[in-house]
Image 1 (tube, helix red, strand yellow):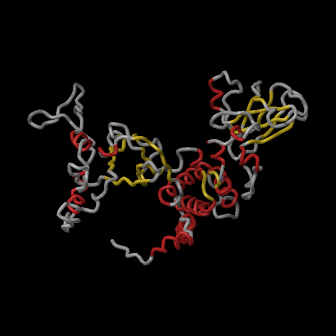
Image 2 (cartoon, rainbow, N blue to C red; image 1 turned 135 degrees about the horizontal axis):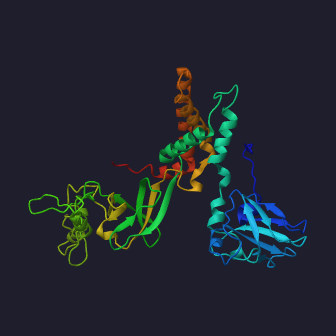
Image 3 (cartoon, rainbow, N blue to C red; image 1 turned 90 degrees about the vertical axis):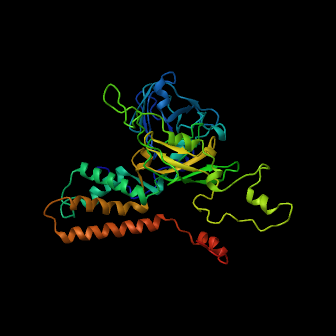
Length: 414
C-alpha cells in the first residue's frame, strides 16, 4: 500500500507551469526507461501518429541532441508506457535530451516559442492540484490511519471503504463541495438544450449579453409545464394504443403554445406602435407628465422581468426556454455527483477530515454489536467536521463583505 506523502509538492515548476518534464539518456541502450512524475497520469494509445489511437495520448515526447530551444523534434519511434513509466524500444544516443510534454490543444514543438509551450486543457487540469487529494489517496490514508490492531476499526475490506468513500463524496457534492460545473450552450430554434451527461440538478441558468454579462433566466414554475405523457385520444377522450398495446404518443400542445407565446404579455413589458413601453409613452405624452407612470399596480414580481424563463422537460431529458431566448448564448451551472469524471474525484484538503469522519461512521454504524456510545460519538464528529468544512469552503472574505456593505445607507427592501 502506498505511503502518504504528507501533502508534499511532488512536481517541479517546469512540470506545473509548462506541463513538461526533462530527462537525459544515460545508458544509450535499448530498453532505457524514465518515470514521469506529473500529478496527472499519462494516457497512452500509440507511439505512431499514423495510428488513430495516437489521438488518445495526453502527452508527446520530444528529443534534442543538445537541449537548446528550437532543436527539439517529436519522437515517433517505438516506445511503450505502463503506468507513468516510458520505455524506449530502440536505443537512444547517450546524452540525448528528452522532454515529456502534456499535450496542448493545438500540438506544437517544445521550447521554440511561447505559443508552442504546453498551455492547454490537459495542463490546466493539472493546475491547483496541490489544493486537492484524489480519492485513491484518501482511501489509502484512511486504511493506514484508522484500520488495524488497536485502532478504531480492527479490520475492514478495502471495497467497503471505497464504497463509503464514494457515497460520502456524492453526498458532499450536493451541498458542501464545489462540484458545480458549467456549460456554455446555444439555444437552437426548437428552444431546447440537451442536459449534460453528468447533470443531477441545476444551480443557475443565465444568458450572456454582448458584453459577456450574465443575465439570470428564471424557472417558469407555475407558468407552464412540459407534460411527461402526451397520449393520443379518440373523439371520446380515450387514449389510443398501437399494435403492442402501448399508448400512442403525440406532440405536446402545451409546449407548442409556450414556445410561440408573447413574453411581453406575461411580464407587463407592453410595447406601442412606436416601439416604446406603453408606460413610458404615457409618461412622456404630449400633454406633459400626466402621472400615469407605474399604473400597473399588482404586477406579480416573479413575472416582472425580461430575461425569459426555462422549465425542465423530463420526458426528453432537455431544458426548454421561452420564445424570447431563441438563438441566445446561455451558461448552465449545474451540480454533478462528484464521480462522473476523474477530476471530479479530487477532494479539497479542507474537506478531507470530514470525509474520514463520514467513512468511520458509515462503516461502524452498519455493523452489529457496536457500542451505541461510539456510534453516537462518531455521528456527532461527522456532523461537526462537515459543519466546519462548509464554513471553510464558503470562502467568505471580509474585504468583499466590506465592499458590499459600503452601500449600507441604502434601504434594503423585500
